[in-house]
Length: 184
Image (cartoon, rainbow, N blue to C red):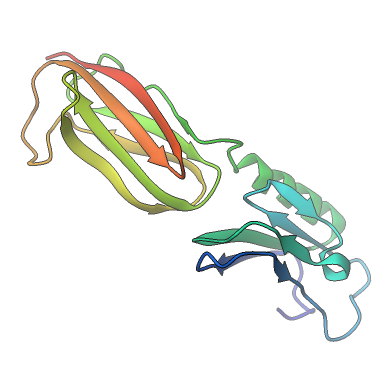
């Protein structure tokens, strides 16, 4: 980044192979920090802000098994403060699976979910007997708020019958299920 640039956000992602920590992240500026330039680093998984990153660095004690997200925010004081607040507002505090809407539904419904960390996510739909109907999501997703749509079909894209179904979110040791009702 050039020191001539003002007001910006840079996404940083550290990849780990599960080696034990600590991991130490530091940064430096070749010349002096220009007057009026403020720098903050947002530690996404911890929802923490490091205002003195250049002096203190960042130590990550836990083992990084996949990705570890940071955002560096630089600019004038107001820009940095407002941007950091906006970034923090977009990071969920915990994993969650919301109730689908509409519920009951026909023929489609939306399911919102929140991820405080980037990682592998699986959202599966089961019938009342506990049999898997379809998998809506099975991939690595970034932290944040997400929505997936279920069109009331099985994994072969055939419409399913009216009845009770369950959506289940699994991610990083988290598991939550919600009941849904399909009426035709």
